Image 1 (cartoon, one colour):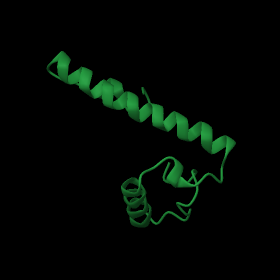
Image 2 (cartoon, one colour):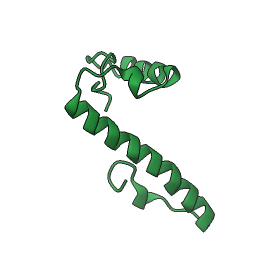
Image 3 (cartoon, helix red, strand yellow):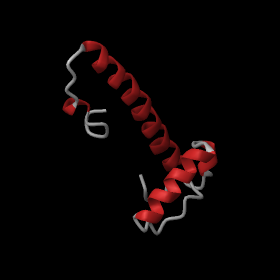
Image 4 (cartoon, one colour):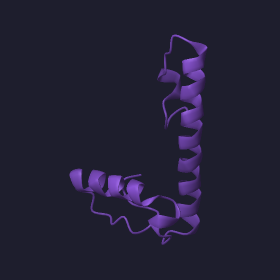
Length: 80
């Protein structure tokens, strides 16, 4: 969470806003950790196992915009 989500950079005026930001970032950090572990053990794992169809479309659009050479058919695209 510290390096990947930059949690220390968050500055909120209320404790409630900070709690919500931390909760969202915890989910993101957990998914990143899961993808990292699965990517190491199962590098040919289909992206559909980890992402919804909408998430895959967003990642494909992002990869196309940034001209990523890696296909998004596996769990280890260069987008991560």
